Length: 182
Image (cartoon, rainbow, N blue to C red; front, side, top):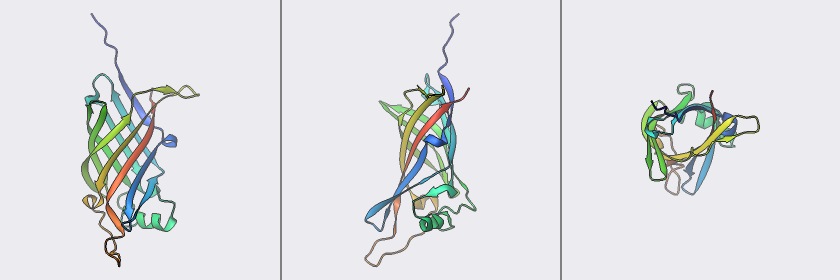
């Protein structure tokens, strides 16, 4: 009779040490960066069989912060995130796939009431550490690119010189630290 050591662990996002950010081209010349200050989520990590792992994240859309109050107010409006109607941005994984040294997580991103599959390119999840208070932590960075119009975020303004005020391509980056549960 053999005993099998389990490598399955449950983790929660540590919001104090995690961030969700984005960048989008503004006026066709420079990228504007922003983020969200409130996020939560969980990771069920099966090290022996990564394909059985799952991750979920929830972002409070009203916590958008671009360091410009008027722009943040506009982003919360019906022109963009419409936080009154769609208070959360969510990601729920469908598959984990190891491709050589690279981890890819496919999942459903729901933004502005629209759900589309995205692929997150992930770095990390390989080293567990104990913090000074004895909690076990693990970290990862993940990124993807989306077209904002695919999610119904269509507002824009034409520029006198040609082009538009807000680009369609949005880069999303998650830098997360998870705390082991139990």
